[in-house]
Amino acid sequence: MTDWLFSKKSGGASEGPRGSADEGAGARAWLKKTNDANPGLNRIVAKWFKEGGELPKEISREYLERYRAAAQDAIDRGIDTQGVQAQRIQRIDQVLGKS
Image (cartoon, rainbow, N blue to C red; front, side, top):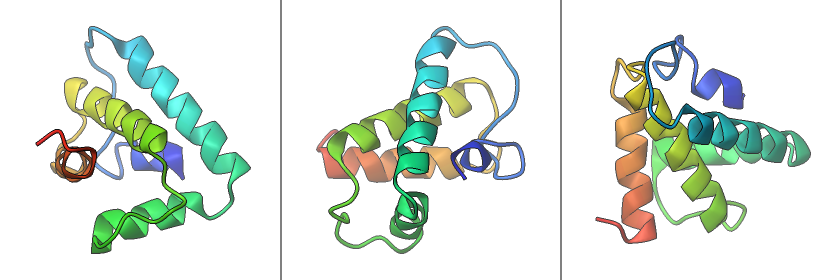
């Protein structure tokens, strides 16, 4: 599911230039490992992004920070063609107090 969230089909992935691609790749790898170790977590995250509301207890600050890095990487690589990851970054920033 994590791979799909940042894929071309979801409007979140592609090839392209990026200064800190290692950070984005590392964040995606961490998210995949975390999601694999916690069945259902990716559905909880997707539901929260879609419906809003209170942050579920299963979603940690570290998870949001890593998700933000992966989403920013998708934007920087020119793959966020529909603005999905940009919207998610705005939501994450609100929760983390960055906006």
